[in-house]
Image 1 (cartoon, helix red, strand yellow):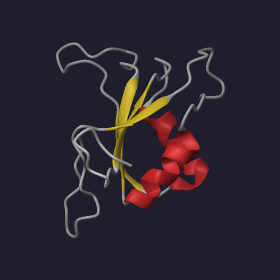
Image 2 (image 1 turned 45 degrees about the horizontal axis):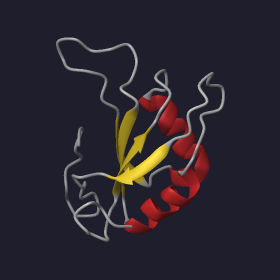
Image 3 (image 1 turned 45 degrees about the vertical axis):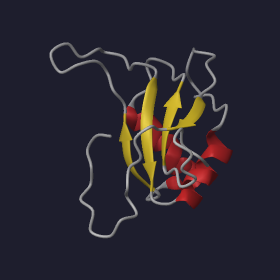
Image 4 (image 1 turned 90 degrees about the horizontal axis):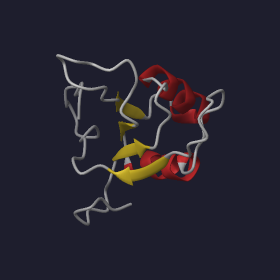
Length: 114
């Protein structure tokens, strides 16, 4: 799994093409139900700026995994994923994030945003 800089240790991915009404909680529920509970550190979904937040998401989220193994399993399980119960027909797409989270580093404080 290589990020755009050629790094083969990608642990942070951008989950794109999300239905606009999907929330961080929805993503966490799906990740946990697919066996990733405790395997990811951050799920961040931008929704505009602080002065003018949107009621819907911007169509993407970032997920930071504890290891490259978890990240690889996520790519296998989540590529072309479709959120059940959504009226949207969008298929999710994945790509390594430009900025990589370093969750696996011992004693690293949780990062609320990527």
